[in-house]
Length: 324
Image 1 (cartoon, rainbow, N blue to C red):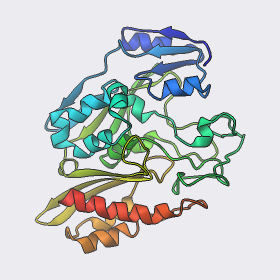
Image 2: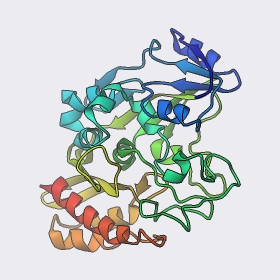
Image 3: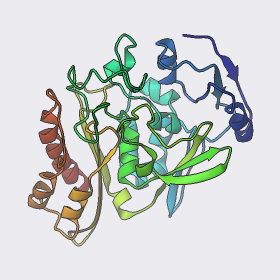
């Protein structure tokens, strides 16, 4: 770990001012960033600690849920209003990491965690995310856990966040603050595909930070489910995950929302499955037909072709759970 200066501002404006210095980086719970610092993957010259800034409120009413960026994952997971109105968010949080990490990890930090690709995490290997233009050894190397959707010739690393998948399915909005003020963007537009710049993972501008996430209340949000398939039962990242929200009336699907994790270089929305479900009956035959097209456009590497079938089966099962 390299030496750095620590700033501890007491307000949002002070935090944004501190982040203007070259080499500055925000730190929230630190559950991912501290690992990256220890491994010299991240080498900021200044850390701006957000602990005293606030931004930790959790508010819900009949129209929307608002999660402050500094709200702890564990607090959001046990909040009664979140559990009642947005169960997929709760399930995604509870499937994340361990209780100890969730007690420290924040909503904003979770959305900004870096990939768990082993080549990215080991500085002994080349990696285009760490050093643009150095290469992507995962493409021809160990790629069982890598993405089958959204990859490029420069990167096939999967996005790691469970929460981001649930938020993507539920059309969440991300509030950002920077030197130019506030802006709100759909979470679907927040993450960038790797293309030829895999080191640029989001649309965040220098010195800009997440301050909140908002999610509309809806029938689909209330009837939502998050399913995570992984190699072990806890403290493991997804092989495949699926978030589903279903708004139905009299046994007919009026609106369906779906996104997948573990398969894409960013949380992966499944609009083709949503369209196949709309106006159809809540029946296994319908779920089977819709899930069969979930992996459309997939481009597996040598070792992860199994994710196509696993994704289809996960979508089918998640639809069953959301409709139960």
